[in-house]
Image (cartoon, helix red, strand yellow):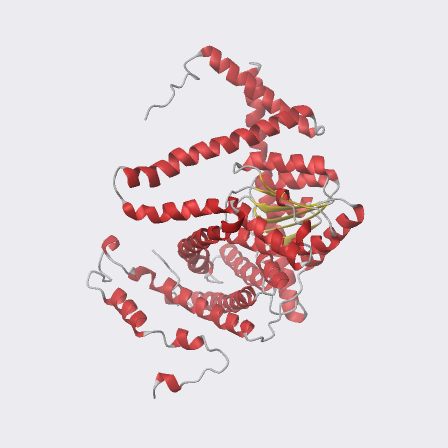
Length: 218
Length: 303
């Protein structure tokens, strides 16, 4: 299949137009920090529209053609007629009297996804997590032992907090309270870590404006 | 004794679980004993049964059985207690406030597809929110990120309005597809927040980096915000920017509590029992490990 030749990157004019467009759109988005305004609205609508169109094109070339159409028409894999029909049934939603057909496809999609992911969750989020938390409470080293004790207590009390079959009262409630503290401390750490990563994203964008667009930084 | 004389007056479906059909037993025996499988076999691609993951199979079968038993209990009307979650009152409060102010309610279901269990839980909550909103005749906007979620969201809102006895109040245009691209979706939702000025923003589902963008905008508009997600890295943002936050598994408990659906209640009770067992395993395992008995931990290892 022939694609249009990429001129951006090879052509200085196109590069410049691209940089100016990206910079102005960045400023349009940043203007939202002041208040909602026509510039932000323009950037928002452009972003939403382009991403939706780009998504459809991406799905067509990267999913529909290589996974269904070409194997079906060029390689003769007739079994793919089944998912093709189920895919078509999804569009029955546009017809009021036949919209219930789409439920078959939805049921199949949800069922298959659930079946596939349960193996991953079972191993990664259940068995291996249990294994990782089976730690000796005394290892001969004070700090390591303290770390293991904190981790074990944190996991068990955290599980108590997420136990819904019993009211959080008495000793059970105290365990849940300790679990809440562990959760809040972990959220605080996670918050700080994520804020740092967001700052690096902001720095990247500011750097683009300063270096890529204005040429102030090198 | 014939299997047929064993009576299961309370849980008729348990008979099928405990005494599965012969073909099913033979199928599993074939899987386990099929000649190309063995412990020593290195190349697992030609085998139908991976012996290295027997522990996972045992765990999954056990947990499935527990959940099915509780679902059966819920189906026959046994009372299954679930403690009240604080965030539930917050949803009603938020909808009530929007009604008093004569402003709409905005419901955001996250950016994951229907294969994500959080999206499924979110759709269940959406149905109940729609029912609540229809009762008060308050507009409900549902911007959706993933195309597959749109028909489900439409169905849930429609059912909610019908359950409240006001099917004519359902407006299909209020369930809108925005974009599958994460930040385009966030930009679209932020635009709705700024222009429609909803008095209540309800965010339940799977969220990522867009969580703070939306929660911060909602905060700026002065809306009462209730959020819930099981994505732990996004919870801190919801905690700081929202009035109430439903944490992690509370999201699934909320959906079960609101719907009173036997399958969801049974699943929740089953997972509670599983958690109790895991707590015991952790306590016993830690003690055994401390005493130098490490064989126990090897049961929970997957290659």
